[in-house]
Amino acid sequence: MKIIDKSIEAYSIEHSENEPKYLKALAKETWQKVLQPRMLSGAYQGRLLSLISKIVAPNSILEIGTYTGYSSLCLAEGLAKDGILHTIDVNEELVDMQEKHFKNSPYYQNIKTHLGDAQNIIPQIDAKFDLVFIDADKQNYSLYLDLVMPKLNPKAVILSDNVLWDGKVANPQINDEDTLALRAYNEKLITHSQLETVLLPIRDGLSISRLKD
Image 1 (cartoon, rainbow, N blue to C red):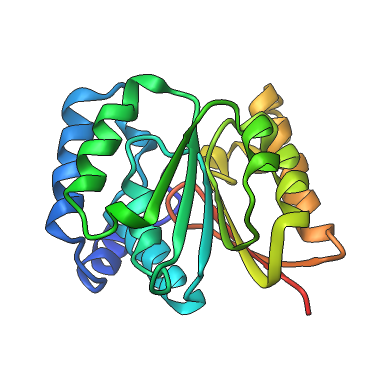
Image 2: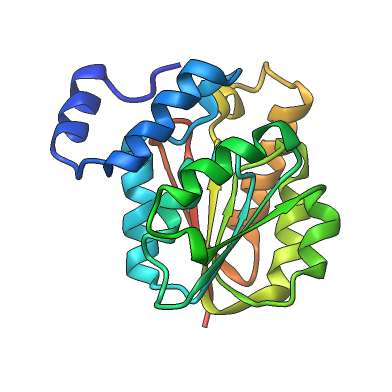
């Protein structure tokens, strides 16, 4: 489902920052070698993730769902000096690709990868976060939110990807498990007493939530 007219989307991309060369190489390899390359954040959303991270200037970032590492590197662009990005993924088949492209970036020393179930790993990370990016299995989004809330620094920002789910969340006739989970998650964000949220209709939907003062 195309939410925005193609010509408007193309104009928007043309008038946005370009991705660095090391990200172009990562995107190219993902599309050539990995199943479901559409899961990649892509250049346009990647530049948005980078800009948000630069505005927040986080000392500590948590990413739930590394995939091939594209969004990790975009988020790392905004890290404060000596900041750390913790990124979690369950797919061990992608570890070598992640490692390769992290090494080819300026942020290799700032990225700590975690392999396994995010439900178990999040409580074990000894850190509090200024920025969180949730982009993993959709049915556990609400659980991940519950797990990260106690680990947020004041005024922390939470980014949630794929929250429009090809527009399915807005169609009451579609009720598969992922769609129902994302509908519930979107309601949880907008009604959460500790958060203020805006849902942006770009790509597959990106929510920006901020921990209230």
